[in-house]
Image: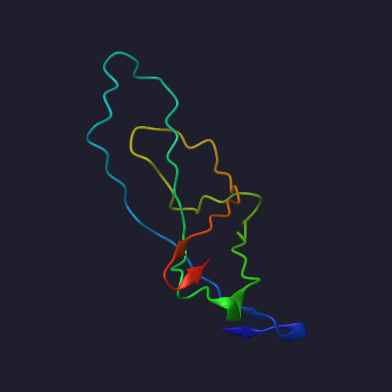
Amino acid sequence: MRELSGGRRQLLFRFSSRFYDDAVDFRRDPFDVLKVPIIIELEPLWTSQKYADLRLLPTPSNDNLVGELGSLSGYQLQGASFKPFLRRSSNSLGTW
């Protein structure tokens, strides 16, 4: 964690994973565009009132969110985008 001006803090994360989807069938349309949504979410207890102004911001490299090793077997990657989304959850402990 890095301390920033104004009492702010910065945490940096690097995400890497493999995704498998055996349900996709391209026999009728093998050249279709494939969109792979990836949702990054924080646990409600971690984002308590102490971190009410918490934001997840991407750090693009050369205006690209896909890393150098990013690939999808059999496809050409055209790019990636980051779309912010706010979801509020309520339970017996309160609302996040």
